[in-house]
Image 1 (cartoon, rainbow, N blue to C red):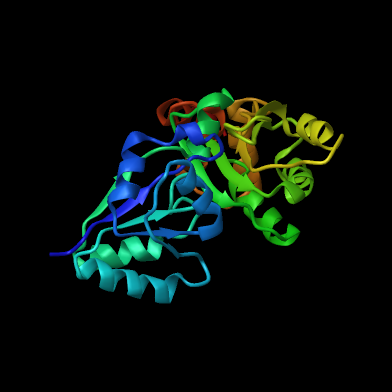
Image 2 (spheres, helix red, strand yellow):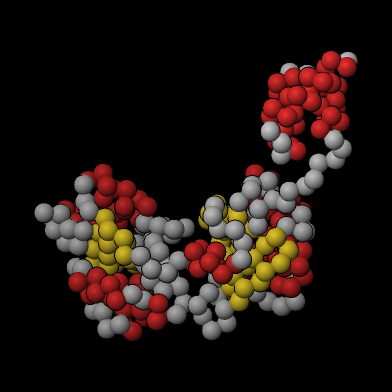
Amino acid sequence: MNGTLYVVATPIGNLEDMTYRAVRVLQEVALIAAEDTRHSRKLLTHYSINTSLISYHEHNEEFRSAQLIAKLQNGESIALISDAGTPCIADPGYRLVFCCRQEGIPVIAVPGPSALVAALSISGLPTDAFRFVGFLPAKKHGRCQFLEQIKNVQQTVACYEAPHRLLSSLADIIEICGADRPIAIARELTKRHEELFSGTAGAALEYFAQGSVKGELVILLGSALQRQPEGTVRDALLRLREETDLSWKEIVKLVAKEFGQSGSVVYKESLELRQEQ
Protein backbone atom coordinates (compact mmCIF):
# COMPACT_ATOMS: atom_id res chain seq x y z
CA MET A 1 0.00 0.00 0.00
CA ASN A 2 1.10 3.57 -0.64
CA GLY A 3 2.21 5.78 2.18
CA THR A 4 0.65 9.20 2.81
CA LEU A 5 2.04 12.65 2.10
CA TYR A 6 1.23 15.07 4.91
CA VAL A 7 1.42 18.78 4.07
CA VAL A 8 2.23 20.22 7.50
CA ALA A 9 2.02 23.89 8.45
CA THR A 10 4.70 25.13 10.87
CA PRO A 11 5.02 28.36 12.88
CA ILE A 12 5.77 31.61 11.06
CA GLY A 13 7.59 32.95 14.11
CA ASN A 14 6.25 31.98 17.52
CA LEU A 15 7.04 28.30 18.17
CA GLU A 16 3.97 28.01 20.41
CA ASP A 17 1.81 28.12 17.28
CA MET A 18 2.72 24.51 16.46
CA THR A 19 -0.38 22.29 16.72
CA TYR A 20 -0.52 19.02 18.70
CA ARG A 21 -1.44 17.21 15.53
CA ALA A 22 1.50 18.64 13.60
CA VAL A 23 3.93 17.47 16.31
CA ARG A 24 2.41 13.99 16.32
CA VAL A 25 2.52 13.64 12.54
CA LEU A 26 6.13 14.79 12.37
CA GLN A 27 7.02 12.22 15.03
CA GLU A 28 5.22 9.36 13.28
CA VAL A 29 6.21 9.76 9.61
CA ALA A 30 9.23 7.97 8.18
CA LEU A 31 10.75 11.12 6.69
CA ILE A 32 10.35 14.90 6.71
CA ALA A 33 10.98 16.83 3.49
CA ALA A 34 12.04 20.34 4.53
CA GLU A 35 12.81 23.48 2.55
CA ASP A 36 15.91 24.18 4.68
CA THR A 37 16.98 21.28 6.89
CA ARG A 38 19.18 23.50 9.09
CA HIS A 39 16.30 25.85 9.79
CA SER A 40 13.79 23.05 10.37
CA ARG A 41 16.09 21.15 12.69
CA LYS A 42 15.74 23.94 15.27
CA LEU A 43 11.97 23.45 15.29
CA LEU A 44 12.26 19.68 15.54
CA THR A 45 14.77 19.92 18.37
CA HIS A 46 12.43 22.25 20.27
CA TYR A 47 9.70 19.58 20.15
CA SER A 48 12.06 16.58 20.59
CA ILE A 49 11.23 15.23 17.13
CA ASN A 50 13.93 12.85 15.90
CA THR A 51 12.52 11.99 12.46
CA SER A 52 15.03 12.01 9.58
CA LEU A 53 15.16 15.12 7.40
CA ILE A 54 15.73 15.50 3.66
CA SER A 55 15.95 18.74 1.69
CA TYR A 56 13.15 19.74 -0.69
CA HIS A 57 13.41 23.21 -2.23
CA GLU A 58 12.92 25.06 -5.51
CA HIS A 59 16.34 24.04 -6.86
CA ASN A 60 15.98 20.28 -6.36
CA GLU A 61 12.23 19.64 -6.32
CA GLU A 62 12.10 17.99 -9.74
CA PHE A 63 14.46 15.10 -9.03
CA ARG A 64 13.65 15.03 -5.30
CA SER A 65 9.95 14.61 -6.08
CA ALA A 66 10.74 11.42 -7.98
CA GLN A 67 12.71 10.08 -5.00
CA LEU A 68 9.93 10.89 -2.56
CA ILE A 69 7.25 9.38 -4.79
CA ALA A 70 9.24 6.13 -4.86
CA LYS A 71 9.37 6.08 -1.05
CA LEU A 72 5.65 6.80 -0.78
CA GLN A 73 4.89 3.99 -3.24
CA ASN A 74 7.00 1.74 -1.04
CA GLY A 75 4.64 2.38 1.87
CA GLU A 76 6.57 5.11 3.71
CA SER A 77 4.65 8.19 4.89
CA ILE A 78 6.32 11.58 4.47
CA ALA A 79 5.69 15.04 5.89
CA LEU A 80 6.33 18.13 3.76
CA ILE A 81 7.21 21.35 5.59
CA SER A 82 8.50 24.76 4.52
CA ASP A 83 10.67 27.20 6.47
CA ALA A 84 7.57 28.83 7.91
CA GLY A 85 3.83 28.66 7.43
CA THR A 86 1.90 26.43 5.05
CA PRO A 87 3.82 24.60 2.28
CA CYS A 88 2.84 25.22 -1.36
CA ILE A 89 1.65 28.78 -0.62
CA ALA A 90 4.39 30.81 -2.37
CA ASP A 91 6.69 27.97 -1.28
CA PRO A 92 7.90 24.71 -2.86
CA GLY A 93 5.59 21.71 -2.81
CA TYR A 94 3.22 21.98 -5.75
CA ARG A 95 5.18 19.56 -7.93
CA LEU A 96 5.26 16.85 -5.24
CA VAL A 97 1.56 17.18 -4.44
CA PHE A 98 0.70 17.09 -8.16
CA CYS A 99 2.76 13.92 -8.66
CA CYS A 100 1.06 12.28 -5.68
CA ARG A 101 -2.36 13.06 -7.11
CA GLN A 102 -1.31 11.62 -10.45
CA GLU A 103 -0.07 8.42 -8.81
CA GLY A 104 -3.07 7.98 -6.50
CA ILE A 105 -1.04 8.64 -3.35
CA PRO A 106 -3.08 10.14 -0.47
CA VAL A 107 -2.29 13.77 0.39
CA ILE A 108 -3.52 15.13 3.72
CA ALA A 109 -3.30 18.71 4.99
CA VAL A 110 -2.28 19.37 8.56
CA PRO A 111 -3.36 23.02 8.70
CA GLY A 112 -1.89 25.74 10.82
CA PRO A 113 -0.11 29.10 10.53
CA SER A 114 -0.13 31.15 7.33
CA ALA A 115 1.31 34.66 7.10
CA LEU A 116 -1.23 35.51 4.41
CA VAL A 117 -4.29 34.61 6.49
CA ALA A 118 -2.83 36.08 9.69
CA ALA A 119 -2.21 39.44 7.99
CA LEU A 120 -5.66 39.53 6.42
CA SER A 121 -7.34 38.78 9.73
CA ILE A 122 -5.87 41.84 11.49
CA SER A 123 -5.65 44.26 8.56
CA GLY A 124 -9.08 45.85 8.82
CA LEU A 125 -9.41 45.60 5.03
CA PRO A 126 -12.30 43.70 3.38
CA THR A 127 -11.69 39.95 3.34
CA ASP A 128 -14.94 38.62 1.87
CA ALA A 129 -13.02 38.43 -1.40
CA PHE A 130 -9.29 38.88 -1.91
CA ARG A 131 -6.59 38.08 -4.45
CA PHE A 132 -3.24 36.55 -3.45
CA VAL A 133 -0.44 37.16 -5.95
CA GLY A 134 2.63 35.70 -4.20
CA PHE A 135 5.76 37.87 -4.37
CA LEU A 136 5.76 41.06 -6.40
CA PRO A 137 8.17 41.02 -9.38
CA ALA A 138 11.67 41.95 -8.23
CA LYS A 139 12.51 44.31 -11.11
CA LYS A 140 10.84 47.73 -11.45
CA HIS A 141 9.64 47.21 -15.04
CA GLY A 142 7.94 43.90 -14.27
CA ARG A 143 6.52 45.24 -11.01
CA CYS A 144 4.99 48.30 -12.69
CA GLN A 145 3.49 46.16 -15.43
CA PHE A 146 1.93 43.91 -12.81
CA LEU A 147 0.60 46.86 -10.79
CA GLU A 148 -1.06 48.22 -13.93
CA GLN A 149 -2.96 44.93 -14.18
CA ILE A 150 -4.30 45.08 -10.62
CA LYS A 151 -4.72 48.81 -10.01
CA ASN A 152 -8.48 48.72 -10.65
CA VAL A 153 -9.22 45.45 -8.84
CA GLN A 154 -12.21 45.76 -6.51
CA GLN A 155 -10.76 43.32 -3.98
CA THR A 156 -8.02 43.35 -1.38
CA VAL A 157 -4.78 42.29 -3.09
CA ALA A 158 -2.29 40.42 -0.90
CA CYS A 159 1.36 39.82 -1.67
CA TYR A 160 4.65 39.00 0.00
CA GLU A 161 7.67 41.31 -0.25
CA ALA A 162 11.31 41.25 0.81
CA PRO A 163 12.32 44.01 3.27
CA HIS A 164 15.08 45.42 1.01
CA ARG A 165 12.54 46.02 -1.78
CA LEU A 166 9.71 47.51 0.30
CA LEU A 167 10.49 51.19 -0.35
CA SER A 168 10.90 50.63 -4.10
CA SER A 169 7.64 48.68 -4.23
CA LEU A 170 5.78 51.37 -2.29
CA ALA A 171 7.11 54.04 -4.66
CA ASP A 172 5.82 52.03 -7.63
CA ILE A 173 2.45 51.46 -5.93
CA ILE A 174 2.12 55.22 -5.45
CA GLU A 175 3.09 55.86 -9.08
CA ILE A 176 0.61 53.33 -10.52
CA CYS A 177 -2.19 53.13 -7.94
CA GLY A 178 -2.00 56.54 -6.27
CA ALA A 179 -0.70 57.82 -2.94
CA ASP A 180 -4.19 57.65 -1.44
CA ARG A 181 -4.62 53.90 -2.06
CA PRO A 182 -5.54 52.12 1.22
CA ILE A 183 -2.80 49.75 2.36
CA ALA A 184 -1.83 47.56 5.31
CA ILE A 185 1.65 46.14 5.83
CA ALA A 186 2.26 43.34 8.32
CA ARG A 187 5.82 42.80 9.51
CA GLU A 188 7.35 40.06 11.67
CA LEU A 189 3.98 38.44 12.40
CA THR A 190 3.81 36.45 15.67
CA LYS A 191 7.35 37.54 16.58
CA ARG A 192 8.52 39.89 19.31
CA HIS A 193 8.62 42.94 17.05
CA GLU A 194 5.33 42.28 15.24
CA GLU A 195 3.95 45.38 13.57
CA LEU A 196 0.98 46.32 11.41
CA PHE A 197 0.94 49.59 9.51
CA SER A 198 -2.47 50.72 8.29
CA GLY A 199 -3.11 53.81 6.22
CA THR A 200 -2.39 55.00 2.69
CA ALA A 201 0.43 54.07 0.32
CA GLY A 202 1.86 57.59 0.61
CA ALA A 203 1.85 57.49 4.40
CA ALA A 204 3.40 54.01 4.35
CA LEU A 205 6.35 55.16 2.24
CA GLU A 206 6.93 58.11 4.54
CA TYR A 207 6.74 55.87 7.63
CA PHE A 208 9.02 53.05 6.47
CA ALA A 209 11.56 55.45 4.92
CA GLN A 210 12.45 56.66 8.42
CA GLY A 211 14.61 53.63 9.19
CA SER A 212 15.83 50.27 7.94
CA VAL A 213 13.13 47.67 7.29
CA LYS A 214 13.65 44.18 8.67
CA GLY A 215 11.64 40.98 8.79
CA GLU A 216 9.14 39.17 6.62
CA LEU A 217 6.44 41.36 5.07
CA VAL A 218 2.88 40.96 3.84
CA ILE A 219 1.49 43.86 1.80
CA LEU A 220 -2.28 44.21 1.59
CA LEU A 221 -3.51 46.65 -1.02
CA GLY A 222 -7.05 47.88 -0.49
CA SER A 223 -9.53 47.79 -3.38
CA ALA A 224 -9.40 50.58 -5.95
CA LEU A 225 -11.13 53.74 -4.81
CA GLN A 226 -14.45 54.36 -6.48
CA ARG A 227 -14.19 57.70 -8.27
CA GLN A 228 -17.38 59.67 -8.82
CA PRO A 229 -17.76 60.08 -12.60
CA GLU A 230 -17.87 63.63 -13.90
CA GLY A 231 -21.04 65.08 -15.41
CA THR A 232 -24.36 63.31 -15.88
CA VAL A 233 -25.43 60.08 -17.53
CA ARG A 234 -26.62 62.13 -20.51
CA ASP A 235 -23.24 63.87 -20.76
CA ALA A 236 -21.49 60.49 -20.83
CA LEU A 237 -23.86 59.14 -23.49
CA LEU A 238 -23.26 62.14 -25.72
CA ARG A 239 -19.49 62.07 -25.23
CA LEU A 240 -19.17 58.39 -26.15
CA ARG A 241 -21.51 58.80 -29.12
CA GLU A 242 -19.42 61.69 -30.47
CA GLU A 243 -15.95 60.33 -29.65
CA THR A 244 -16.34 56.62 -30.47
CA ASP A 245 -17.77 54.29 -33.10
CA LEU A 246 -19.50 52.16 -30.49
CA SER A 247 -23.10 51.08 -30.93
CA TRP A 248 -25.78 52.47 -28.65
CA LYS A 249 -25.98 49.08 -26.93
CA GLU A 250 -22.27 49.16 -26.11
CA ILE A 251 -22.44 52.80 -24.99
CA VAL A 252 -25.35 52.09 -22.65
CA LYS A 253 -23.46 49.18 -21.11
CA LEU A 254 -20.32 51.27 -20.49
CA VAL A 255 -22.20 54.21 -19.01
CA ALA A 256 -24.30 51.99 -16.75
CA LYS A 257 -21.11 50.45 -15.36
CA GLU A 258 -19.41 53.83 -14.94
CA PHE A 259 -22.31 55.36 -13.02
CA GLY A 260 -23.33 52.22 -11.15
CA GLN A 261 -26.87 52.35 -12.56
CA SER A 262 -29.05 49.67 -14.08
CA GLY A 263 -28.88 49.15 -17.83
CA SER A 264 -32.60 49.75 -18.20
CA VAL A 265 -32.39 53.22 -16.64
CA VAL A 266 -29.48 54.25 -18.87
CA TYR A 267 -31.18 52.72 -21.92
CA LYS A 268 -34.30 54.81 -21.24
CA GLU A 269 -32.11 57.92 -21.04
CA SER A 270 -30.47 57.01 -24.35
CA LEU A 271 -33.88 56.59 -26.04
CA GLU A 272 -34.96 60.05 -24.90
CA LEU A 273 -31.69 61.46 -26.16
CA ARG A 274 -32.06 59.84 -29.56
CA GLN A 275 -35.65 61.08 -29.89
CA GLU A 276 -34.52 64.65 -29.19
CA GLN A 277 -31.75 64.35 -31.75
